[in-house]
Image 1 (tube, rainbow, N blue to C red):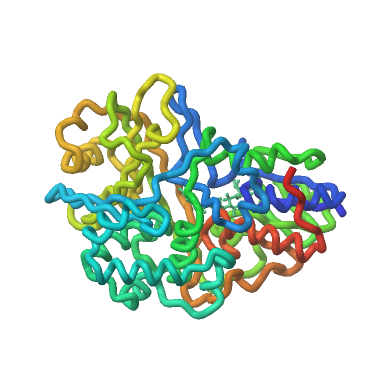
Image 2 (image 1 turned 45 degrees about the horizontal axis):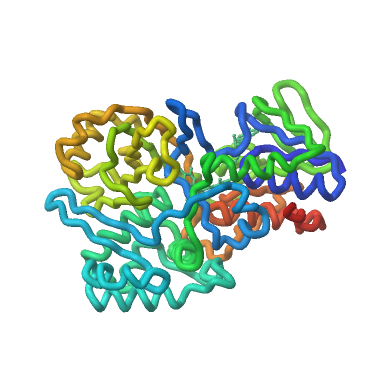
Length: 414
Ligand SMILES: Cc1cc2nc3c(=O)[nH]c(=O)nc-3n(C[C@H](O)[C@H](O)[C@H](O)COP(=O)(O)OP(=O)(O)OC[C@H]3O[C@@H](n4cnc5c(N)ncnc54)[C@H](O)[C@@H]3O)c2cc1C
């Protein structure tokens, strides 16, 4: 068959690889000048910088099937999260004591014994065999789910920014099942960052393509079951796979598929350089006061703690989400970070600000299945994280589902 894949993000690349290895002729159309979609890394002042805080979860079953993690020369984040309450300077640590017993006492000190037990119960309920199991039953939203678990308000001041960072949704209206899924992934695997940035993950799939024709800088404007239109040109194909983000799929598909209009979730990363880091571990520092007056920075991490800068510089990355992420002013961000780290921030220089629009899809919280039902929309196969859930696992699982529908076996990892 002659197959068109529209979109060279992770899902599109996986479909293309499966199709070409099954002997089909594949044309991969990509609107931008590069492959990888939202798994993007830019070169900046002699070093690589990811567009947004992005990690690869080694526990994702699809990652294990598709990605050679060793080849990525990744390094893991610490098994814990630290929070800061900027007004008082208080910091708290939350760690997985089952994997790192040294985190037991600091975690109990941070959340108390009762919430410590609630965390333990939640941790024990996660399944390493089927991380997505929670998606198959009705789920409340994350806000409701945290209330149902009866965490104390002070503990929620840790969990709310954590899940806001994961879903990039300040309203926490995503399914709680998705929180369960990510909790399971964090519990049963590592969160790693590849040496050459997160884009090395889709690049690994791209580098395995041998016969696929990749057409960059080419935005497809219309799709049918057997054709794509670019400008005035119509290209005929036996099958068309649409692997674009949710808001583009909503425009290209002949009918509404999700029953709701896509909601934009955006994030900005404001990066500064310093001669010494404000902390030395590969951790997220979450803002417990995030969302209150004057607290727009959601979290801070230091990417160079994991993969050092060749010139010995230290990068400090501040993440903002929602409205606060629209054109953030680096001076405002620096002023805010002064209340976190003190006057040492006055010597920091601004390196870059990267804003990712339409960063993650919005999945209806009433939807309860790991996949959204429609794969085939009037003959077009629709893949991407918006057909499943907003993650690397979701994007690859949607690709596997399309390959399955085409009776194509999953490609073997080299
Ligand atoms: C800042 C950020 C942090 C994240 N962190 C994590 C994380 O820590 N862990 C995790 O599991 N997931 C994370 N994710 C989610 C994960 O990156 C995505 O779920 C996944 O990359 C989506 O892949 P995709 O192929 O579905 O879509 P995309 O990557 O969006 O790929 C779609 C492709 O289609 C192209 N395209 C669009 N329109 C057209 C057109 N008209 N014609 C041709 N091509 C077109 C786009 O340019 C793009 O290349 C994060 C995402 C972001 C943005």
